[in-house]
Every structure is written in structure tokens, then in C-alpha cells.
Image 1 (cartoon, rainbow, N blue to C red):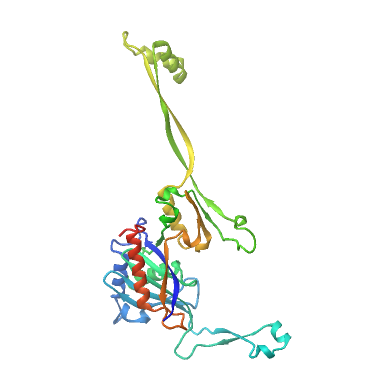
Image 2 (cartoon, rainbow, N blue to C red):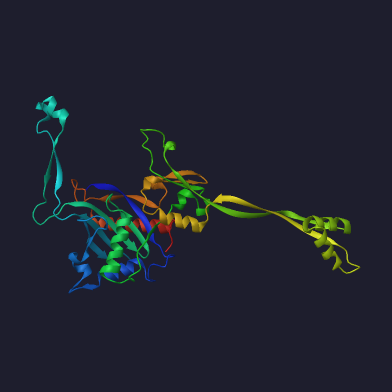
Length: 348
């Protein structure tokens, strides 16, 4: 059986926004699937798992295959549009005997309905939740935003296992092995569509550099001005003649004057703080991978390399098929999770 190279994207439920209960993401998904809608459990009735797509009338998403394991919940989300016809490109039947006019003009485009009892799929995405960790093999039409929307609908609106004002936000994680051991090592993040390399150099693209000014303090040392004359001169320079005289008048008659001066500086520095980096990561979690470029202490990373992910070979259901073998998808995602934990890229 042949295999397909797939990118397994990593996300993690965001906790610091207070928008999710104390239970883990996988526990709440399992609870939702075991909840009843009418006479059947949601996990046992496909019709109870069909949801509309926001801002896309006529399209629907459905959690089709679903498995609840001891430590995880797995599923695949399918996108379809009931009754929609599929466009077909009608190739020249006999290219060897086609006239020049037939070849140069255009091929015909026809449309076909799905067979009775079937619908054409626009995309399939495979996902797994392990605690608050979330892994996904996504389709261009079913990316992370689609997972957030669908799972929020499933848990909040359909099963009502989270609050009416709560939602799921799947936080993207930058790959620390690529950008440095600390998010503070990042110098800048650039956002914008990459210019195709065949058109002009990428440096001419319209990137927006996101940085933050912070105030830094430092010390240049400490100086002591001993003796009456030296000490008084420093006081006069700092406080003025009148205030210096007031201060000196309070001294005992037999006391010696000693003035200690700490010399420091206050300056602006352009850097990323960890909290600021977390907010940037949240805001960019659904931006296409190719539109992010990160400059770190060790150079530049862009696209897929910046976010935490892993490429794995996954079996197909047959040599001619593009559908993935679900048991092997589960096995490979669990392996990626094990590796990320072992390598310290994520924590429990």
C-alpha cells in the first residue's frame, strides 16, 4: 500500500484568555460526543454533527468518522455543499487527430451531479485532541479557523458543554528549535504575502515588520563625593543653591558631608517581550504559513518552518486513492506527539 507525505500541524488550546472551562479540550469534546441530542448521542448520529459554515451559505461541515481513545479524541471534518454540481474538464477525445483549432481554442467544461445518495466533498481534514494539544492534517478549505468554528459550535451550541459566551481558540506555537530557546530571541516578525520567486525577489514584497519599543534601565556605576566643598558643589548642581542650603542647614555641627551619586541610564530598546509574542502568535494563528517570516538570533525562518509541525508518511487506503488510512493517521499523530514531548518542544 502506497503512502502520502503529510504535514501534521500543531496547535494548543489557549488558556490565558479565560474562554474555556478547567477540563481539557479532549475531555470536553468526548463529553460533547457522549451528550444526547434528541434520542441519540451526538457521537452516534452523523446528522447531529452537521453544521453550517459562517459567511458561506449553502456549505456544510460534518464531523464524520470519530474515535474516543483513552487519552485522545480523533475525527475528520468534511466540507460539502448539498446538491452542488461538479465541474468537469472535457479533454480532446483523440489529441493525435485533433485539428490545430481544437487544440488552441479551449477544452469544453461540463458539469455533473453526484450519484443519488452522494455529495461531492470539497475537502477533508483529520484532527486529534490530546489533552489541550491539537494536531491536524488540514485541507486548503479546512484550516485551523474551520476547526475552531466547528468545535466551538459542537461544544457550545450543539452539546452545550461549555458556556454560551465561551469558545475555542487554537494557539499556534513557534518552533523553538528553529527560532531559539526563548521567544525573546526573536527580533522581528514580518507579515505579508510572499512574492513568487519567478516574478521578482522576495525582498520587494510588501511585508509589515511588527516590533515593540520597551524601556530599559542600566547602571554605569557609583561615585562618592567626599569633603565639604566637593559635596556641596554636587548638591548645588543637582538641587540648586536654595535647596542645597536648606539641606546643609539640617546637618549636625560636627558631621562630615558625603554625597553618593548613582549614575544610570534610561533608553528605548526594540525587542519582543514574551507576553507580546504570545499575543502576536494568537493574532497570526490562522494566517497562511507562507505569509509569515521570523527573524531570530540565528537568522531567518519563513513559512512552515516557523510554526511547530512535523512531516510524516501516512498510508493511503489504496494505491490509486487520495484518501488516508485512518488507523495509520491516528498512529502517526500519536507518534508526533510522543516525539514533541520527548524533544521538549511541548509540555504536558
